[in-house]
Structure formats: C-alpha cells, structure tokens
Image (cartoon, rainbow, N blue to C red; front, side):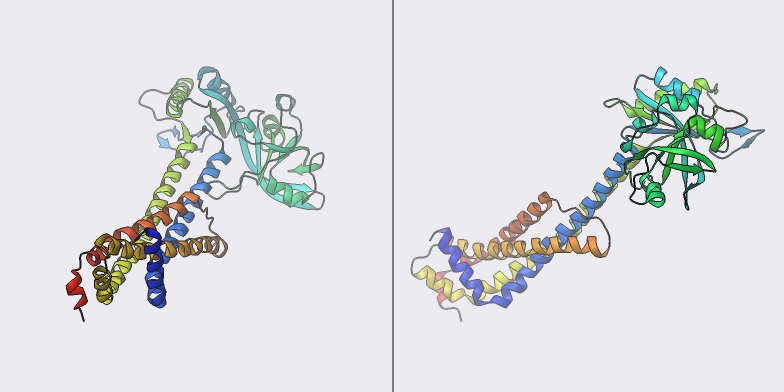
Length: 410
C-alpha cells in the first residue's frame, strides 16, 4: 500500500466522523491562529520601535545641560545652561568619530498666518541640524550657514504645523508671524512621527539659531552663546560607546571639571535606549508566541486522544486488514496519515483565522500588526510536526495489534 492509497483511506475514515474530526482540528486551528496573531502583534511593536529609531536619526547622541552646584546647593538638570555653541564647534573638531554636532535652542511660541494661529515649539538651529537628525525636506531649501550668519528671518515648518496653518496648500514662500516677528517659510520638513515618549516631532518650526536668540526666544544673560542641546551624529561604523566616552572627556576638559566633580552636562545615546526597547519588544514577541504555542500542544493531545479512540473502535477492521495481507507498516502509515491530515487541514484553516485575527486586532484595537511569512510558515510546520508527534503513538499501537486478537475483539 503506497502513501496515496493510505491518504485516500485516511480521508475516507475522517469523513465518516465529520463532527469529531472538526472538533479534533479545533485545537490546531486555534493554536495556529493564535501563534500568527500574537507574532503579528509583537512584530508590529518591533517595527514601530525601528521607525522611532529611524525618525530620531541614526547614531545620534543628545547633549544637554546637567546638574550644577551653587553655594552648596545642587540644582536640577537643565536649570542652568552649561553647554554652548563653542562646545558644538569643538566636538567634531576634536573627536574624529563625530560627523556633525548641531547646537539648538527651543521654546514655545504662538504662530500666526492670516486669521489662523497655532501654538508650537520653535527650534533655533544651524545648517547641520537636518543632517544630524536625518531629516529631509519635501519642498523648499534648508537653513544654510549664511542664514545663521546674517540672522535672516526664514523658517522651516513641520508637517503638523503646516497642516494647521495652511491645510493642504504649499506653505513655501508664505509669510508667518512668530511672536509677532515676520518669517518667510523657505521649506517644508518631511514627516517624522512620534517619539518613544509620544511627543509629535512634526509639531515644530525651525529658524536660524542666531535669529532665535536675537529676535524670538532671547539669549541667556549669563552666557549669550549657551544652547539648550547639541545633536551629535556619529559616523557610520564607529563605536558609539567609545565616541560617547571621548565626547565626555573633551567636555570635562573644556568645562574645567575636577576628577571628583560630577558632569555638568548629560549625554543620552537615544539609539541605545530605543534598541533596548526593540529587544524588549522582541522578547515580548517570543513570549506571546510561546504562550500561543501551548494551544498547539493542547490540540496535539486532542489528536492523540481521538486517534486512540479511533484505534479502539476500528480494532476489528485492523485485524481484518492484517488477515488479508496488510503489514504493520501499512497500518502505521494509514493512522499516521490520518493524524497528519487533521493537523494540515487544521493548520490551513488556522492560517486564515490568524490572518483575519491580525487584521481585526489592528482595526478594532488600533494596534499595529505585521504578519511575517516566516511566522505563518513556522506555525503551519509546527502544526504538521504536532500531527506526526502525537499521531505516531496511536498509529504504532494500531500497527502492533495481534490480528487474531483484533478479529476476536468485541
């Protein structure tokens, strides 16, 4: 008896008990569907974190002011501006691994265009800011060194700001007022999306750093060249940790800090933070898949249980087949094919359930899901493996029956 004949006999036997076969496949269907849906949820979370890493800029370190001590009192981080434009100029000059270091200041402002207004965040930046943050333009031109040198009144708009002021119209060339100061819009920034903290990166206006200090946000009285932050982009292929150490050493020297003194600045390697979140999302994906796989094991136990019942019910049939010449391996193959058929049909239906469930989760719960072909193939293959594993024992038991005893079985 060949495999094709065994498969035909197995399908015929399953069709005799349609309801029992359907209930037996239910565990596999739920298991495969759950694995696909849960892996899709985890993969969606990983993709979201990867997008956040990309939106912040690759190989990025953010330098901000740290805590300082005044008359024995330790002030909070950022309470005094301890970093400056001079630090930003020195970092790429002294640290070879640094590609650019872009200083910036920021503050909230009400922006007006015609009879519309919008409250947003204004950043005073240099020409290196877009390169440091890997931020592209969809229209217009970037802020150049000449704009910073001449303190020109030009602005780049984020997508959210542009939408609230101009709708779908092109803002390039239009005049807006930032704190009653007129600015010409010279460019529209590409969409960045939200940060890992949920803030909208597109709700922003970029203006030249010198213009921001002189005409909009004001400069620090204690240190006119002080800035709020410096975006440091490390060259591709360079060691981020080593570059961060070199930047820290340089800043401590420039700020004349003693070995026992704490840093008066703060370095944040955002890529490392978000990569840690990505690893956490990956662990969550594995955990969800492992939990869902328990359903497959339960389904496999159900298959073994039903197959054992089937062997008991068909004992006389098995004895008759053996009496007319069927060998033990033919009986083994027949029952094993039945178990595998149950698993494969259940796996196929489970794939449809999993894909439907993934779309339902994305639509109803508004969670991003990402169905990976590898996850679908793995779930289906695991279902087939479950059929072989849990179907082998009942098949082996049937193959080892004594023909005489089987024929006498009532």
